[in-house]
Image (cartoon, rainbow, N blue to C red; front, top):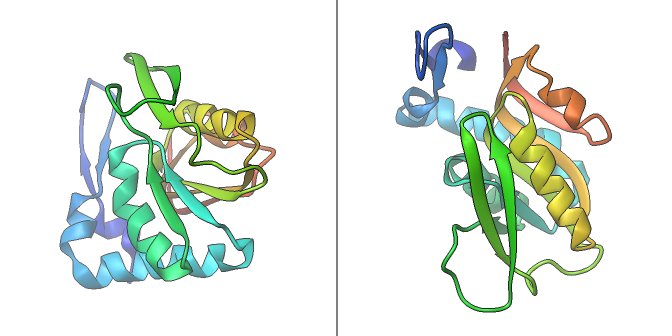
Amino acid sequence: MDIKNIIREIPDFPREGINYKDVSTLLLDGNAYRQAVQELAAQCKHKQADLIVCPKARGLMIGAPLAYILGTGLLTLSMPGQPEDIFNWHYDLEFGDKPVELDSGIIKPQMKVLVVDELIATGGSAAKVVKLLEKLDAEVVGTVFLVELTGLGGRVKLQDYDTISLVQYNY
């Protein structure tokens, strides 16, 4: 099954010249979704991660079933307004600044962590999450993406980490 052909492209969204990769069409196809997650799990099994961290909610669509298969814990970085003892962090996106909060007691020193998201473009979000995790003394054992937009520099920002992507689009 060609996973790439199942992911819908929406031309000129969110602005002209960008072809948005809509993974919802993959999620609607149970067989394709299962195959995609199983292929990623097979590539990640040797990493022996303790935890999967998803930088944003969309990554949870890949991170949750991946954590289940690999037998790891799962964490999605949260938005402001959560309980006390929070590590607060801001990062820049192409379209503005975004705050993220993390309970400082969740990440244990030397915990092996995989950063998982549905898509990597410029790599800014993933790189910032990696730095945050390392600041909390985690060992980032890799970064994993369903979709990679090559040519936008994302992989370069993560060059010190084993980066896995299932489907690549040339941009």
